[in-house]
Length: 213
Image (cartoon, rainbow, N blue to C red; front, top):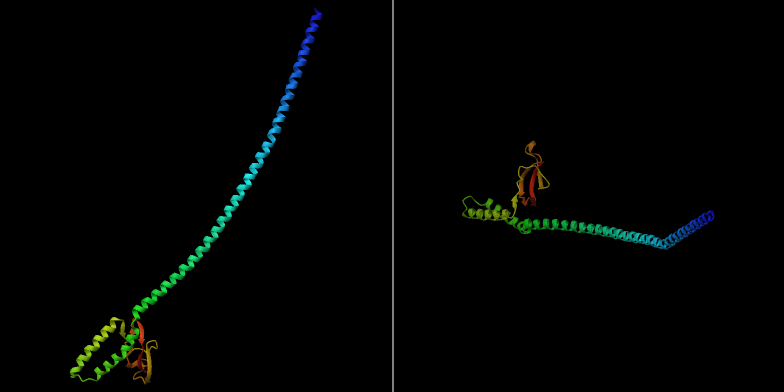
């Protein structure tokens, strides 16, 4: 009986030993499998890491190129804007200058012709002044002179009032001086030898005057 019990214990011990060895073998096998899996996964992880670094470098390179292009386009845009502003300013100056010249031409286009007509007006005024009041030609001369002056005034001609005014070298040309008849007359125009005229508010002919001194 005791012998059977000993045999039973020995069998159980062998079973436990075998189970331990099997378990240990299974653990070693699992560890080996895990290590092998890690070895297989390690290159894959390294490859993925290198791929991410490559993509990052490529992205940075593309961003740098885009930034450089944007900066270059900004410089070109600034240069084109400067050229446009210079051209626009030159055009505006040209337009203003040509507009002023055109306006001046319209206003004073007949300046030379009108200036040539002034001696004729002078002669007609002197002729009328020397005619007798009852001369039948006087009225006709006055009518002709009036029509001529009206036509010239429509072109901007305006007679200059000088007699009794203070002498002004901007409008008057003193041909002689005489003693002033009164202290308050000193420096004034006593007589007009040749009438002055404006053309569109600009002096066309200076008045030739006698000044009190």
